[in-house]
Image (cartoon, rainbow over all chains, first blue to last red; front, side):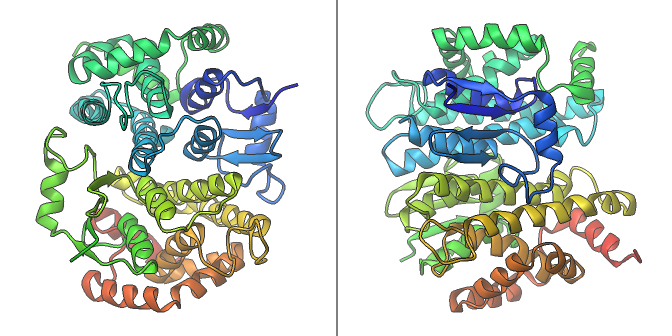
Length: 235
Length: 235
């Protein structure tokens, strides 16, 4: 019997952050079918499992809880499964990393595909993407990368911040290999953290299963096609 | 001596959510000057108060803490000042409301001004804006609007969810009066909640001060100009 049911598209992107946490804590979950996800999304808010604009939606069957919004789902799972630091400032910094990750997802997809990537737009975005990487790197440098008490990112026992940072940068650079050198240059410690998290058995298993089901896709659709096109073009 | 220093533009928008919470808990805070905000934003992440892409940034002087990302700052203040429900699901629903509000801000500004509003784009967005309002209304209907234990939105003692919902819809419809009938139609209980919160003495005082300093501006810039233009055009 599944503890959780996840409603998300058959894609990594935002849903994979939830899957990575569920896999990490050893939860048993089911994935709703694409038709169910689409049906929930299109339904009147009055009859939705939880009023929401788009997936992910997570059901916690034991708590009879229905949640939407990736940051809220991660906050809930992080609290329930002990993945958030005790210190209130570091807890808030964990939420900050989730919010930063969510912003990077918006920007990489030009707000969920509101515009397609062009060579010119991509070129203009490069320094900003590098700066996002540096923001993660510097956050890790200040708050982690040394397994001391009161640290948060890159510590011995992975917490929500680690799983989220690794999911963002590790999955993105795995799906878009030309971006890996950029990550290595701007955020070498985050790149190494992403590799360490990705090598954990539960994450290896999740990635294997996801790759089989979703192939090379990341965010999917026309926006992914336009991103692949600009990445293939000579710099 | 100020307990907090807020770095934000001289505008409501995302910063006003932080101000509304600070005002509600009776905190004493200073606002950094526009030059300081711009300087922090442009600085190398290595020397920023907290590595960030954009304001708001909040300093908690007592805790010697530096935070960025509106949702993370609100989670921190909500926890510190007892504005979050005890129940873990309702806590997560409070974070969901913050994430929804943040998404509405992105969409109202076409991702922080990435594109200008046109009459066609605004017309296409209308049903979606109404749906966002319905999502808030239905969330309030399920979890609040009846001051019982285990409720969250529209209850006797305003919590983070109330302050955020009121700030989003109340300030938006105060600055853009043509949107108020839409809110009254799609989310009458949220409209009433926004009015009740706005009438609290601390919020009245904040709004008076903000109106004096920021005038009619909401998000500012060309995106606000294009929004005002489409709202003035005959439907």
